[in-house]
Length: 285
Ligand code: PAF
Image (tube, rainbow, N blue to C red; front, top):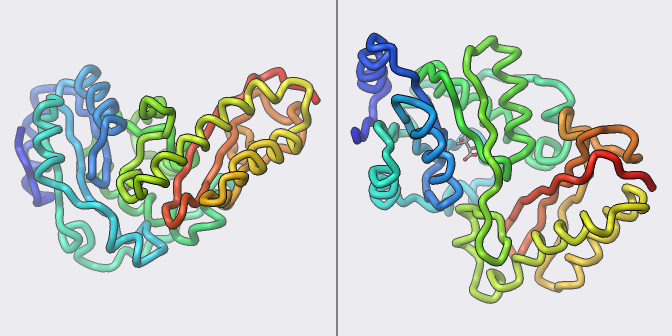
């Protein structure tokens, strides 16, 4: 496994791989890798001749300076895990390498990026599009792997590759969960032991809401989720929206989509956690 910091070096290595007609897979990450990331890497290794993993805490997607400063950075440990997972190239550039000049590009992928995370974290998806488009231009992967925990992010990236005509296949991979159901996230390490113990309530409630949903209206399901989670004083729901999983637009009646997905953001103390759940396609109520 090669650890590469410079764009030109990575391009040279990959040019050789491409000459040999090898299929390239990319897993973009911000490091602090956990089993969720490693499941993406495993899939990338299985499905491609060459697996590239980028490890880069992208400053342009953080709308909160404190969040950027405190984001966990564990490159040595990440590289050990990636080596064991069969990764071929770790691309770990500096901020100056990725942004020698400020990236002034602004993207508009329409309504898909205006709701939920897009509405609450101004500039976040623009920053994601900046860095992911750069990674796609640098690596030119055949396949790129993203986790469904960031459900809206995948929709934004799909809209981006379509609008910018980037020839890459986007592969979405299921959420990986801890044994108690908590969606794996690098942010989980910031939870205090007490918060960590309470945090699985989010996933548990989402799961219960799937059983609760038949015969209930969309609003009744939303109220159930919010009230159940907020019974726990350490939890504050920032939003819970049930959306059309194709367009990310909130629905008010089950008949509005064949793909209802509930997307949640909860503050557990200071830590912002996200998760989502898919509902049956034929609900009424
Ligand atoms: O999902 C993430 O970790 C980041 O948003 C990504 C896709 C690596 C871009 O920085």
